[in-house]
Amino acid sequence: MKHRRITRKRRSLAVAAMFGLVLGALSMAASAGAAEASPHETISQLNAGPSVLSSPGVISKSSKKWAGYIATGGKSPFTYVQAEFRVAAVNCRVTPHLSVASQWVGLDGWNSGTVESHTVEQIGVDSDCGRPGNSTNAPHYFAWREMFPDPLQEIEPVNAGDTIVVSVYQIPAGSPGDALDYVLTLQDLTKSGVPKSYLEPCPIVCKDASAEVISEGYNEGKSKGPADFGRESFSDIALGEYGDLIGNFATTSWTNIDVVQKQKAVDAVPTPLSDGGTAFSVVWHSDK
Image (tube, rainbow, N blue to C red; front, side, top):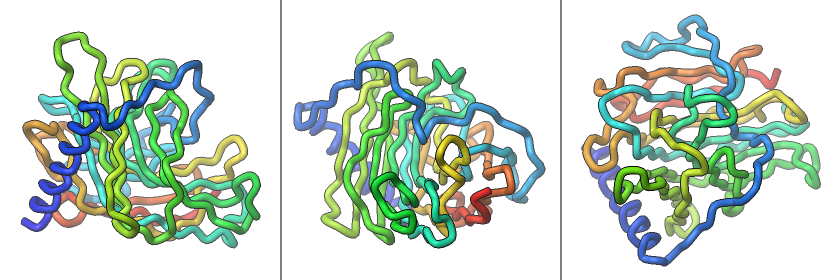
């Protein structure tokens, strides 16, 4: 019952933010031009892997970049996702090179098409090591939003340990064929607690085909794997169709729940779901 009260309150915050945006309190224009490859881009390849968790109804898959849970299927599109987490404190003495640890929620991005056509509507934070201009042992923390394939936009600095609530909400189209808009909201409860919301247009074709809560890190280009974040914990997870059915990763209305672990030398592994499908953790193992 506590989860339902909290979720309803935060959905109300999202609605208020959305109406403020629509009434002109905030106006965001789409980024122009072709985007470079994003450090938060979606998975380009999936390989079926052995089961790492025994949760009923959960399908285990491996990923080059993501660790976490993803919901797909069902009769309605996914138009809402939210989660709460604390900004992971990274140990840059263990990963003293360019390495990324991202915590985010999003819609789409899972089996959503080719690299040229897929989208991800996402918002979250980074806990990075070895960023250009910083000492290799100095961690760097910041919040961001992204409408992939448009470029990532930094929002503000955050601190390790800050309690963050993030959500993505698709505004219903006025009529068939209208372009979709999304409200991306981030609330740092440790600081002012005032939600920051951004109205973003869909950059290509947004299908609302999946909802995900993800820990991301990758070993490609200049990045040498996920920064050592130890353990990241997500809670108060809610997802589904905003105006009708809000559930979580234990809701049987979704056709599939995929749990993904980062594969190479098993970089990061999610724990089983807890609190009725509203919480889980991701444990760091390696940057290889």
